Image (tube, rainbow, N blue to C red; front, side, top):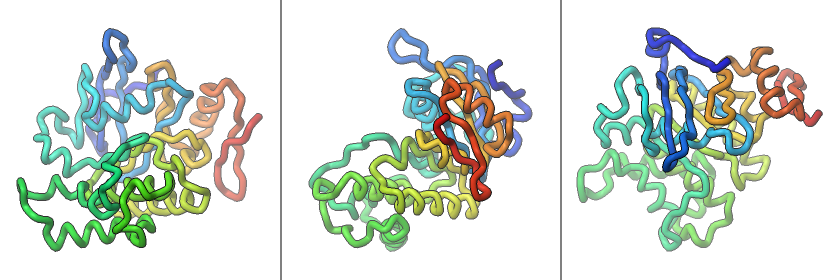
Length: 264
């Protein structure tokens, strides 16, 4: 059975709500009749097999992929929110993003402040402060003057994460944010997300690392363009569906008070 909600429930306490959401690439429909609510002020992880439609769903939520059906951000239809206001409310970290190889890390992160700047205006003191804070939070401050082309994959990923943070948006959408990060910096990312949630932010992330995804408050399980389950990450029903969607090749166990996924 598909995970569905009624519209009244969707709008209450939700960052995103959808009703009969569909999306296509060319003539191929890739998301089918999705009706869900994503809680505000919480972390929701989106998981599922390769090609399930996880990144496509995240792009639709971000307004980067056209859709049919209803999609609301904090109760307002997404298309009715002016682009500038939308860019202030939502920040985005995508997969394999390319920035100008000659741009400095500082300039890349400053791009996150564009929604707050007047046309052709110089960055303000507030913009400079936000960029510095974002670079320090992702431990990328030390190479702020280096070009993106000089950075390793993990270093570049931390700069792009800093760009997303610099927006200071209420909602942060991240597609495979742990890509190229070593284990210590993956742990740092987890602490960062928890800090964002403590500030009342909303985080939605697509993750292949199931054990990290299980640390979120809520989980959407996607397969073949459909949301099969939406529920709390600690719930036994979520664990059973998670094992099933991965063909029972993993098992969910509690270790030292945390739920993790292990090969069966």
